[in-house]
Image (cartoon, rainbow, N blue to C red):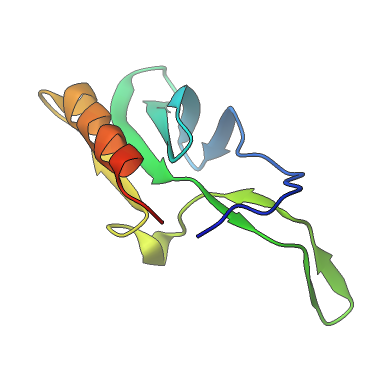
Length: 104
């Protein structure tokens, strides 16, 4: 997929989901790596997301801003991956490297 020429909204450097905080560890042209931490600060896992872009569009009277977006739950395994346990960081980095070699 080709990126739009004017991306306005970018992927966040940090965001929350119930019981977790995700912080950006690394970003490449094709992927992002987040550390997933519990509310107590304990490292739980790493998530890798493929960087994807969308053009501005309208749904009814609502305008959806052009920008980058992360994988949704139903896209897990195709556009997002979780790595936990021994060697999680290394496996996540290997996935990022693999995504960097793939063409859209």
